[in-house]
Length: 216
Image 1 (cartoon, rainbow, N blue to C red):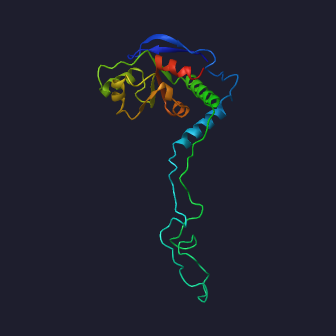
Image 2: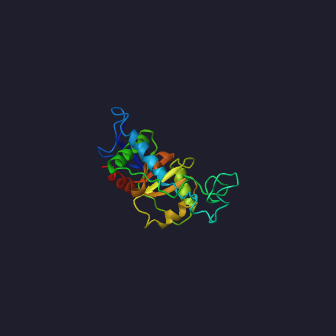
């Protein structure tokens, strides 16, 4: 598997090549299983972190009412009861129901780095990584980004575009906001789940430099 990728301009013309440093990519032919478990654990942790964890039921102490004893202790022929909000009564509290909680899972830095390397290596092996020298737009119009995607043969794919910073890219942020098949990400925020989710990964040269620093 080659560690050299073509650098294109916004018109789809090759303008150079990008050499991925040694130690970033995993040699899949020699170590086909390396990083698979790390990818699984990282994706599970990411999806678990997205859960709100706000499901909540009321216990018998939180249900309103039930202060008075429903009926006398003896003489009715019924089982004794001290509250109408007991869990065995209709309208009573819930036993062991869901409570607000965090579903977050911890992933060690080394495991996360290995998962990123594995996912990135697989996408390169599949030919799904595209590099452009830079993205410069004359204005904030969406049609400019659509034209770039067509020139790069990405118009029919779901695309994650990664830039080194978004603060000084107001035109790109505005122009990509209405595209349902494209998501804009800062290089520092690219995660394993999104590396695997999108059909194509579009990096600027500087954006890929920043991303690879996380893998070294």
